Length: 142
Image 1 (cartoon, rainbow, N blue to C red):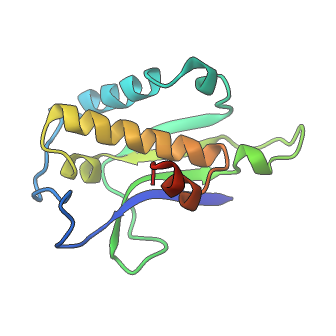
Image 2 (tube, one colour):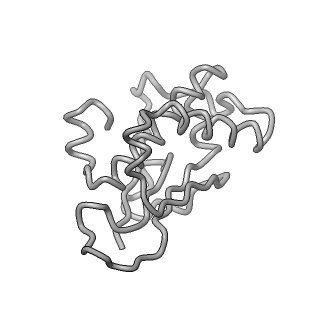
């Protein structure tokens, strides 16, 4: 199973870093509506290719699975990218998890939170399509 991550580096020089409080959605349900809106704004032709994907929200990520605590997970793709699947191969659903608190910490307003959520959704869906972090960086979505 492949695991790919949307994350950002902790750095005092990161001008995008927000105060520890960030912007909080008023409730988990409101945050989940932001996720639903982000998905709904994707092009229909792209959504038509999403196959066997479950999108969930968790409040906080697990401890950094691939780093040394320098990065905070915003989202995580777990599954087999479409580019690596065999024909007719039965698979468990892929899973995209968005981490609410780190995403909220990145934003200062409702609008900025919606943008960060959408960027993370796009990033994780790209992993579903087999686009790795290096290529996402080249495309400006890293």
